[in-house]
Amino acid sequence: MDRKQEVRKRIWDLLEREGAAKFPGARGRIPNFRGAERAAERLAELPEWQAARVIKANPDAPQLPVRRRARKDGKTLYMAVPRLAEAKPFVEVRGDPTIKRALSDGTPMGIAELEPVELIVCGTVAVNRHGVRIGKGGGFSDLEFALLVERGQVGAETTIVTTVHDLQLLDDELPETAHDFRVDVIVTPTATVRMRKCRRPPGILWDHLGADKLTAIPVLAAWSRG
Image (cartoon, rainbow, N blue to C red; front, top):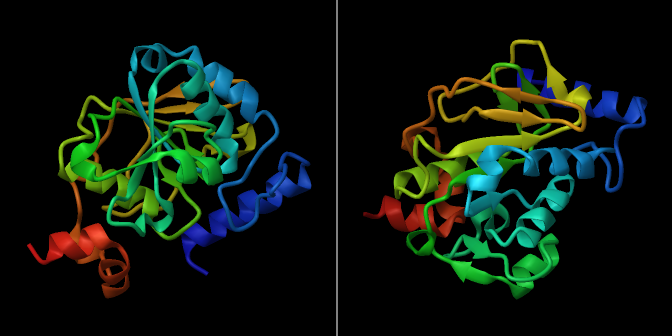
């Protein structure tokens, strides 16, 4: 088991043991947690949220309250298609922001069609006080970020936020690779933690991509052909 998977297992176990996980559970996913609604409320109080007109959010259950707040506040809301599996790999959410309704009712968007993203909300299994985060595995959040950086829709001024349970916020050093991005702000049901903006991947690191991703993700396949 690699170091990232060890951390994931430890957090999934902890959330379940402490009764902090809620449906559909913690294990094997971005864990839904008790207090997600309060974390979304705290996020909406931040000046970065209030100033942002365009937001990209992950589709996982713990960030559903965030997506609902974005719709309520009249913000343009983008979500990625699961596993970036379509030629137009994002949707603009038009109605209810559950993943099923967002995909069925939203407007498919190619990367060039997106407006510049001012705030990103990402799902996290564990995060430390330096902003190093660990996702559920697979690297798709990092790829979404890299695609948007590559085409200029995300830049140094874009704020990256995650909402997590307090138990997911660690003091430990966490493993990271060159293609991992860090978060600028962590919001829990009880606290807001800010980091100084750190190094970010400059775009797609092609030598980090296996043939399976190049084949399975249409936009990468097209770009790799030039």
